[in-house]
Every structure is written in C-alpha cells, then in structure tokens.
Length: 184
Image (cartoon, rainbow, N blue to C red):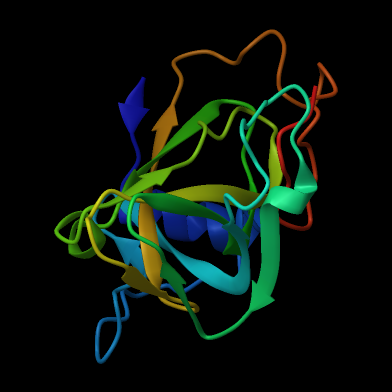
C-alpha cells in the first residue's frame, strides 16, 4: 500500500470524478487552505451544520440517536460551544476507487484551537458527501468556517484489489447526500 501524490489525485479527480468540486491547486489566500496538496486533498466544509444541544438529552445512543438533540443551521460559519461538537458535511462529493482507502486528518490551523476533526475511513467504492464530527475541546467557543478547509484526505492505494468493497456490502452510508446521523 502506498500514499498517492498530487499528480495521481489530480488525474483521478479529473478523469474519474473522484472529488467534485475539485480544486487542482491549493487555495490559501484569505482562508483556511483547501485543494490539492503534495500527498493529499484538503477538503472544505459545506454551509450546513447540526449543532448538538444538551437540552432534554441525558444520553446519546448511537443505536437510537435522538434527532431532537441537534439544531440544523445553514450559515457561512458555525460557533461550537466549549466542550461540545457539531456534525457537518464536506463540500466535496467523493467516489473512492476499488483499490483505494482514504483517511482524513484535521487541519493544523484548527488543531491549534483545540478542534478535533473525526471522519471514518473512506472505504473502497464508497461515495457521497462526508459526515464530519467536529469537536471543540477548548474551554471557550470556537468558530469554524464554511467553504474553507477542515481536513486533509490521504489516499492509500492497495497492492491488490479488495474482495468486498463498501458498495458490495451495501454499506448504510453509501451515497449520502446530507449530514447523516448514526444508523443501525
């Protein structure tokens, strides 16, 4: 398995529509960077958020997630309360090839503010908008920005093709179009 370079990422994005919309170059001026980097792709946040509210919620159960625990907002930014989290989605739609696994890490700009970005691995043949959990570990609120970078996707190409892909097993998050809460 090997990590893929910017040339491979550009080729796959342009020829196979692996990332849409796709920025061939890294955009940095006046924003938290996004676009192609040396060995990855810096994805952006869409302008939709599900903000957690602990009002009337004593427990979050991933097998039975109470949708009323989240307020949906659409904005050019989101303020995450201290020691809380929001769910968001990527601006980019991803289509992962059968011989590739992708992993996301948070952007260092946000890490330095106590923000943790969590995304499950992008499995072979998975496609959709990523649902992103963004946690504020700081003792004060943190502001995050829509249409700007939130995490870097690293693409790992396997030495051989997997026997069963995410699509083959009818993965429950296949083709997601919006912020998707936990499902059983």
